[in-house]
Image: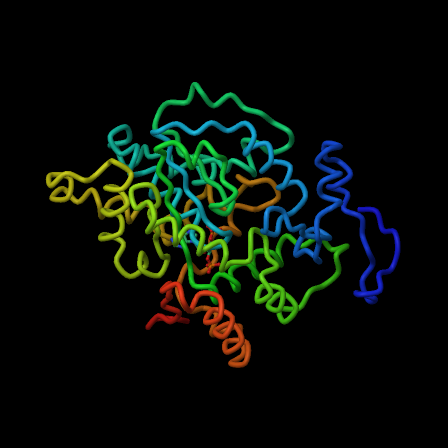
Length: 343
Ligand code: A3P
């Protein structure tokens, strides 16, 4: 990180030139330097690319994905805004699709691999660091994940018959989950950041891949427009009735459970294997890094609904409710934000 000068707007903070920007392809660097920017959470800045906030390295990878990824009709794309249940959805989709291959529970790949190793991110893994992978040889159905908003998905995803599953989480818990997660990975040279500051940025929409409302609404609206293409799930609903939503997910993906499987308890077996409680205890999820810079164990914190009440003041709660009313009120998209066993 190169420290250059003090800024006017954040006089207590030093303006830091993003070392990440310096390392990008020249055309990408030029583009990024022309974009609006705001102070970032774990990089000096976030940049507004195609109306969403993003880190420089991610923008380069997203551009590569947009230019080079070719979706096929059998692809499955898992889309989320960070900290909404991505890891859970990856585990569930992988287990559903591959359940015939891994009939012995004790041999299941999820017991020895983190879900992010089994279902790679396009922008964090496959197209990161200037890579242009040849994915054409992968067996179908290929399962990929992305945090990119619907409007910015590669054209081939929109034009093909691939299926897109979006999982959404109430913004209160998403913020708290992001806050804890980012505290762990915020570089020291960015200085400390308070929860109030992070919360203000979140309410202004300045968070990776945000504003959260645009991200949610893009997939929400598409799920009505093209229900065979986009399945919209909510984290809280899945927590409440995983069996129902697991069956719904399997049907949408084209791998419905047979009556026999249901009788044999396959649905319950998968939901147990992919549960927070099971995954959190596994050695593989307590060691190593499956996504660059992130400890696997930081992906599993509380895994519940309503933890935000332990961290946000009533005033902050009101403020976020107002933002949600203003931005989501007309859409019909609502959330459960409490749970009986919130601790
Ligand atoms: P908390 O920080 O509230 O505990 P993502 O996977 O998108 O990064 O989201 C992370 C959040 O999902 C974290 O929430 C994490 O604990 C929770 N989570 C991880 N695995 C889960 C699982 N199998 N079931 C339910 N929640 C899970």
